[in-house]
Image 1 (tube, rainbow, N blue to C red):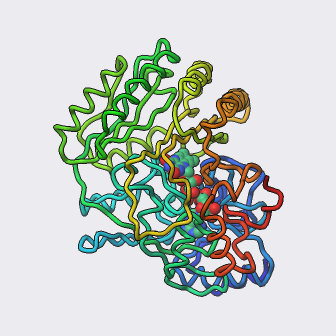
Image 2: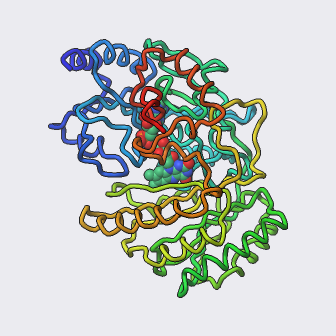
Length: 457
Ligand SMILES: Cc1cc2nc3c(=O)[nH]c(=O)nc-3n(C[C@H](O)[C@H](O)[C@H](O)COP(=O)(O)OP(=O)(O)OC[C@H]3O[C@@H](n4cnc5c(N)ncnc54)[C@H](O)[C@@H]3O)c2cc1C
């Protein structure tokens, strides 16, 4: 570590924090508070050159390091105990090019800051339901969100990247490296800049609907029967819905993030009326807005730091059996405000650019289930964990032919990681790309782990 401290002395513009520093706690904390993964130092490079100076120094001295941005990895994998955290949040430039319909973002940009900047140009790009996440971490592993049926997944928006590679060289990612980044995240290098597609967009209709949920289990079934029928009749690509059971302003309810991503607000209002008729509504915040203001609203609904974890499974369909389990365990959901159950969806009509190659393989239409026990203290969390485990076990015990083998790597803890099922038909290609760009596995703390594959069933 002495050489690292020497490097930092020679580069006084680089801020760092050690456990004795007053800002260490705030800098090292992620979304999930994880006391077992406290680093020895958090280093905040300000440029690609700073990162390029650091990477070889860390590898030469055999120091374990991780890259951190939004800190929203639910398993705390952007920190390593007693290691070095490269915190990219000061590499946060955002350049929008309206003509080429792209935006270049520093590797440390938080989604909400991106939305603020994009709104100035009346453009947008897909983003996660909670914009406190880092945009690179969100987009490079898949990127589910409320614009996937309009513009596609986050991973499909990536058209360029600047990377500090395993040798510490700054390079523009070539086509093969970009393929690996799209789905493989930081496994090939530190992504110091990313270029994303952007789309003209200003006014939209969006917000949350909280349904009356005296009988939550019946509500889940009734809502999904109506949704399924509407889907069969044809949903417009501008409409996207994220179902959740949350402890919101009107108590524990079946809730909906409603997104109408088109300036044709009249048509959007018709869909809002339709969706609002599927169950009696207790409260709605859906209104004409823009992606920035909707993002702020979504952010206001979640805590900054919390205790907790996530359980996940993907289904081809929300069958009556699955919905029954959701109803039963939704009713038992503890009442602490942070805790949440949610369903992302990748629809069959989600657009995908055939010229953009990725190693993200899970393209079959599916529902991504998120059971998220969260709490402000470990004591309160205990009840949520019991609930979450019973819920996920019941879901995993439903008809196995309805369960998608692949899970979402961002939400899959290391002990459940199965690279072959996650990367499916792209597994061998990704493995080759990893070997080509990071043969020594310098980025061994990135989410994808090929080295443990023999232990994975
Ligand atoms: C509250 C919450 C809401 C979420 N909502 C969604 C959602 O709607 N849709 C969805 O798809 N996912 C969602 N996720 C999952 C989230 O997108 C991923 O965990 C994502 O990787 C988080 O990125 P981060 O920068 O915030 O986290 P971090 O923990 O800082 O990083 C996550 C991983 O990405 C790597 N990484 C990040 N940036 C870089 C970079 N520039 N270069 C190299 N490696 C990098 C890190 O090393 C780490 O391995 C959510 C997670 C939480 C906690």
